Image 1 (cartoon, rainbow, N blue to C red):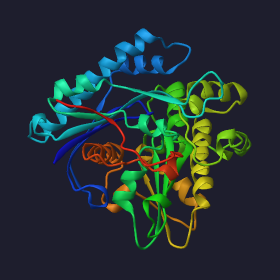
Image 2 (image 1 turned 90 degrees about the vertical axis):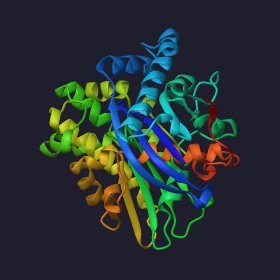
Image 3 (image 1 turned 135 degrees about the vertical axis):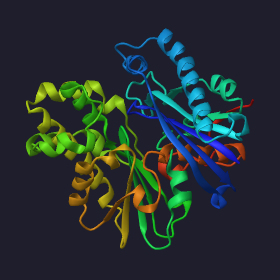
Amino acid sequence: MLAVGLMSGTSLDGVDAALVEITGVNETTQLELLKFNSYSFTEDVKARIKAALSVETSNVEMICSLNFELGQLFGEAVVKICQEAGISSEELGFVASHGQTIYHLPRPEKTNLRPSTLQIGESAIISEIAKTSVVSDFRYRDMAVGGQGAPIVPYSEYILYRSTESTRILQNIGGIGNATVIPKNGQLDQLTAFDTGPGNMIIDELCRRFYGQEYDRDGAHGANGQVDQEVLQSLLQHPYFTKAFPKTTGREDFGTEYVTKILDDYQLAPDDWIATATALTAETIAQAVRQFADGQTELIVGGGGSYNPTLVKMIKVALPNIKVMIQEDLGYSSDAKEAIAMTILGNQTIQRQPSNVPSATGASKPVILGKVTYY
């Protein structure tokens, strides 16, 4: 069956689209990536998303409109990826769309708030444009049974990466970093998964503020700067890093407000700031995964951060006893990883099989994720 997975993450770069051929279900799932592309958001769209993400600038009218606007963009991305592959979107069995996270509130501190999450990008609009069924809103059902709705990708990582020879830790570095630990010969209920903390989020925000650049291309600014150890040790005191598992985080902890605060608290040269933020990401990943190293252990890094050689080098230095690789070392695409994951989750949903991982999210039981908008 042909399917397209869509992912728009915390980095706000745009929408990733992966066209795959997928067969089987559960542990028999087989998948081949046929085509991948990323379609950038315009600056106007990015500005609207950023405004919607902020409690200071967001409003219900904005979110209402943006839900349909992103649905349009996601639907157009499906049509484009299919055209590039020489097929019609009507040939798809389904589209699996993660949506754009507007707010994630797994464990609210205020007593009048409920554990909740909100992803937008209207599935009905996607369905009409792509002329196929859409699976969306994967996080909600896990939260309905007591989970945190995140991390969302561990099931797909278990399907694609489990090994009989070594413990494998899948480290995705998008806006936020998240890790999935698959023990050697491990079963699904033995997985541990959690957000390690900031991935590219702080680095990207610093690059925007200092240089008007969306990210640190080739890790150049981080390589040119010096890590300020005093500032780094202070940043490592953030309470998130000592929270018990399961745990998840996002822009609410490490977004623009956080960057504004640390820039007010400390005075560093621009490249020294970027180097220190890069070291923060590397060290929090290292601190998180060291405890799971067991005999032969491999850390497989994916996401946009895997293309930052300065960051990858820092991770390798921090984890001398773990074999650190990137997705491409195994023949996979770092860029496509999360969009591919959506197709695996969507396939489970279409076939009425669960795809959350309670040991990762804290859910009380396995459940079928997502909602289906039939065409």
